[in-house]
Structure formats: C-alpha cells, structure tokens
Length: 143
Ligand code: 8DG
Ligand code: MG
Ligand code: MG
Image (cartoon, rainbow, N blue to C red):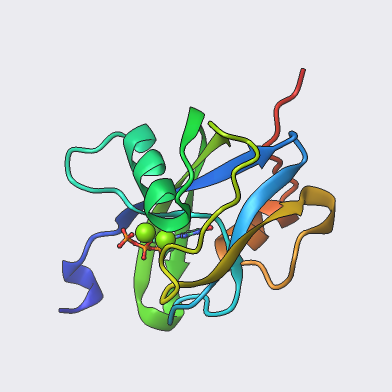
C-alpha cells in the first residue's frame, strides 16, 4: 500500500532515570536505526494506556519493573528511509528495584542495556532521541 493509505503509528518509549542523572539506553539491532542508542519502548497496543505500555515494554525488553511512570512529551517522527511514521510518546519512570541490573531479553533486537550519564551520552543516538538532546530537552526531576 502507498503512504496515502497508511496512518502514523504510536510508540511509547521510556526515560528510566537512575540517581536523577542517568538513563537506560540500548544499542538497536534493527533495520530502523541499526546500531544507534535508543530508549526502551515499542508499539502501543489496542486498548492500552501509555503507562501500561511503558511498563510492559520495559519488562519485555529489560526485565525491569518500573514505577512513578509519567508522561513527558510527544514528538512526530518521519523515517523517510523506510517509509515509517511514528507519534513517539516519551514517558519517564524509575526502577522498583534500583540495584537490579537490566537483562537483554530480546537479543535479536538489542545489543544490550546500560546506564548512561546525561552529560556523557553514547554516540550515535537514535535520531528521535538525538533531536531532543540537540533541542535541549532533559527528562530529569527538578526541585
Ligand atoms: P514491539 O513489537 O515490542 O511493539 O516493538 P519494538 O520492536 O519494541 O519497536 P521499537 O522499534 O523498539 O519501537 C517502535 C518505534 O518507536 C521505533 O521503530 C521508532 C519509535 N521510536 C522513537 N524513538 C525511540 C526510542 O528512543 N526507542 C525506541 N525503542 N523506539 C523509538 O521514535
Ligand atoms: Mg518491544
Ligand atoms: Mg523496542
């Protein structure tokens, strides 16, 4: 089908915050953004809330339980290379068990998860994330 008969999809991704200075990133194995560092997340399923989707994708991809799940913002992302279009919903959350290490639950989709300081992010970042960083966005708690 041509692009005129298709609709944008909704993705929910999560800034999982550690010590209010680090985020969880994984290097993608995918035709879209291969080898770039991206947040955990995936497609919103029919009938799901953003919070439910965030919690489910986190468990499916990293084995970690999250809480304090909050909506941050939404960005519009057109991937002209592979004719995809997403409304990407960015959430933030913290881990229920802060000392538990992430597990690479979907090794066919990800090279592995790790915590990265915001002032020392790995490169290259997945394009939607790169754009936000460039625009000065930060996901952390302010007091
Ligand atoms: P699913 O079958 O588990 O639902 O999908 P997935 O395999 O986990 O999909 P994904 O590629 O991880 O996420 C869906 C789309 O979300 C992705 O192709 C493009 C969009 N997306 C962004 N930014 C980010 C991000 O930082 N991380 C992830 N994982 N996806 C993102 O626009
Ligand atoms: Mg997924
Ligand atoms: Mg995913």
